[in-house]
Length: 236
Ligand code: TMP
Ligand code: ASP
Image (cartoon, rainbow, N blue to C red; front, side, top):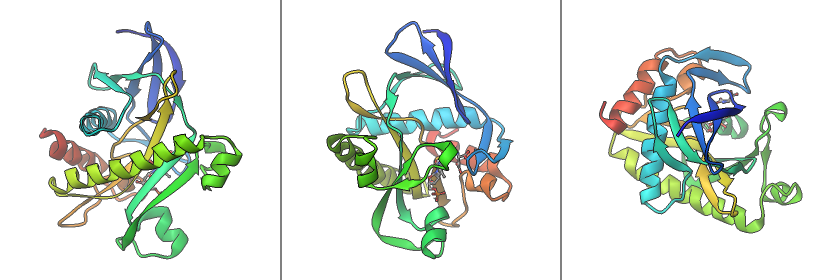
């Protein structure tokens, strides 16, 4: 399978068309951005780590009943995925208060939430990915009622599966962001990535941050944190 034309270049990935109209190749970059691209930098080998970590977790989820876009890893940074039209909703799942939730609600970072929180944001960088609810989604026709039901059910199931899987590796899943897409026949599947860029991972013993917050907050050590996540997940 070969890349043909560049379809889209995002902040962390390039997406290419292939000879097969139903398949794309994702190519992960080392570029790192935060705050809607206002902060820019790079994390050494992030593209390799995010590619491998995402594929590892996508395969685990697929085995456990979550349909995903994963097809085949073809190099350190490249993966063949099913072509989807991305539903322009970022789904955020939270188990522990952190980041924008802590700020918005005045909850101290690290406060365990009594119930898992699901949030939706409208995926539009020029608007700063504003938070929306089911009514906005219906009014803007971003997804049908059935699609949103599937998205919410899959998101909670992903949370249960990942939380259980990661805790055995000494990783607390604080929160994460998912994106879903629709295949040509209208099936909703999990797309995009699941990586230290899109999740908050805290060491369950020390509370050390092992994710992109090291970059966002200028904490340093982001390369080692990403490597540590890959080591715990893939044993290398
Ligand atoms: P937040 O606390 O900044 O809203 O982030 C919640 C989770 O979503 C966190 O795990 C990081 C992830 N996230 C993304 O993947 N992309 C984004 O653009 C943002 C803002 C957050
Ligand atoms: N990826 C987003 C950006 O570049 C934000 C983030 O991950 O914090 O703006």
